[in-house]
Amino acid sequence: GQQVMQIPQYQHVQEGEDFTTYCNSSTTLSNIQWYKQRPGGHPVFLIQLVKSGEVKKQKRLTFQFGEAKKNSSLHITATQTTDVGTYFCAGGNNDMRFGAGTRLTVKP
Amino acid sequence: EAQVTQNPRYLITVTGKKLTVTCSQNMNHEYMSWYRQDPGLGLRQIYYSMNVEVTDKGDVPEGYKVSRKEKRNFPLILESPSPNQTSLYFCASTRGLAGRNEQFFGPGTRLTVL
Image 1: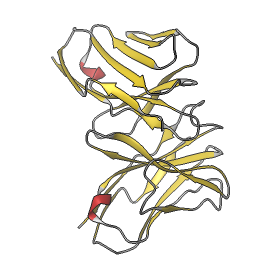
Image 2 (image 1 turned 180 degrees about the vertical axis):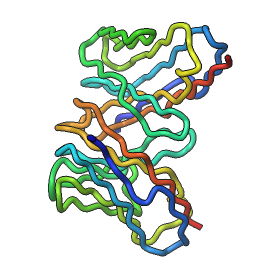
Image 3 (image 1 turned 120 degrees about the horizontal axis):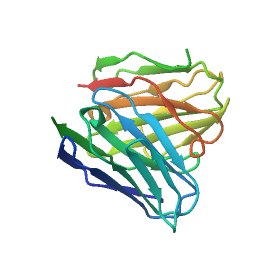
């Protein structure tokens, strides 16, 4: 079945440094979603990418969907302490597959 | 306020004692789903429901049951809990297909089975 892999598992950065998490699927995805989970919280939807090669930006966050629709990335420019949390990618239709997540910590 | 609610939020129980975790949404969403979250494994789907009386297995359905008698409610039933079901559980709902629309998650239920 479809598998979604995400790296790295952990990332610790100094405030102001950039951060990137990568997501790879074993099968072609119709679209991909990204979620953020703050410590002690629940996942919250960030964005959805649908088109091959699509790039979307939300302030300091840049999301990319690969040309083959099998990989995606989330890049945060100049991290802030408010970016702390775990970032998940997810793909599927009704049977959703989530990556294991990348846990980001930011040192002030 | 649009939301997904879960009860209880925390539960400690013993092996074999049947329990139910309730989930309710007030957004009139067709799709509802249960996930479990374990360290290093991310979110794994247990069961999902595309509408009333329509349920299907996710990735890890063994040891769980669900029902969808009303659109707003989607309870998760553990008939005979075991320690390997100790986990953080999330209910989620969405309009239409989960993969095409934003999923709204409940606050989570932390379950410990002794």
